[in-house]
Length: 256
Image (cartoon, rainbow, N blue to C red):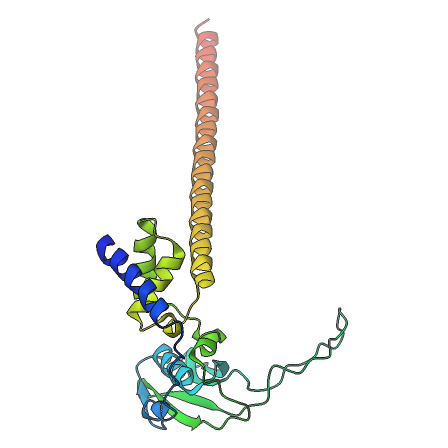
């Protein structure tokens, strides 16, 4: 957890750094950096999520976005045994057979790119079985543009915890964003923007509101069940009283 003093100091340092580097051009990524972290056939991963993260980090340095493609579920194992992660430009978008709105004359957002990484579940681990890195579209080299791609809009648990801690100290979103930028070597290296942080706050508030409504609903249901149970007990006790009164009356008749 970051203390309030560290936060304020970091935020002020970040503002200074942003001003100092405002006129500087962003560093161009090393064109050969991705080769050191490239997947290869036979590489192993403990989980499919580790494989997804690895390929997505590679794509971030390479300059493209990723998504999950085809996958195969084994009926015998009842789990996925093959997953293909592809470039976001893979395939082509299908036009609806009966469009409800007039078609706009705009190019397709996909180019049929063949870049992909396929993994298979073998011997208790996930192994890369196919890796292709040939793209048929331009790759993005600007860090400020790469972070806007869908698969790279990511916020790790450490940054999320730091944001929540600083919000608890009533620090503004802009200063939190600048502080995190200083920790990561500049805001251009962050994979999220201030609007993403605001969206995270709204989502958390909505989640808390829904949980509160659900708890209230459960309490109302429990109260209704208690009331229903009490009514059943009253009915049973009334029936018992009537039975007792009837038995008393029959005994009186017998005595007379």
